[in-house]
Length: 160
Image 1 (cartoon, helix red, strand yellow):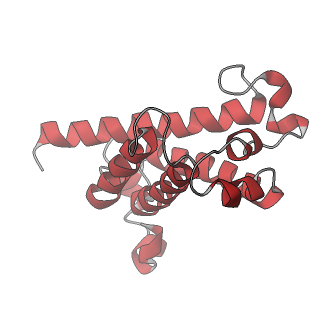
Image 2: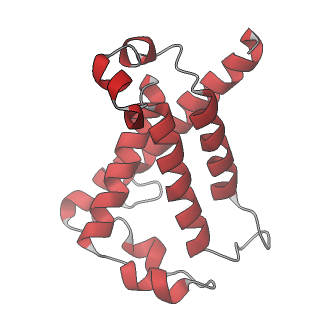
């Protein structure tokens, strides 16, 4: 792939990784942006309750039933953290790309139909970018060179 196009994918990878990490830290500490300080996960609040309990779409009953579940909270927060770290550091990009796509598709399904468009919202755009990252794996400007040469990663392809 030409250098200019690869730089676009690397930039998308890092910016999207920082977006995931920001969401993680905002929900963990309640930084006052999407999550108010009194709603932080560290204070015992559920990071998924607000979003899932307020769904009004086709699958709202299913997702509302998951709201506030400790297992769902842990999976969501670990997903945000690990996907964000993988994208920022350029490691496990196939795994991060596909798992991030799954997370985005689930969040999109929870909000069907989106409020501003009958089909599309930012979750769909993020999912498409994550699929591109999983396929292209733009690991330059990170630890990818070392990570992908590890014998464990070479042996177990799922870690890519």
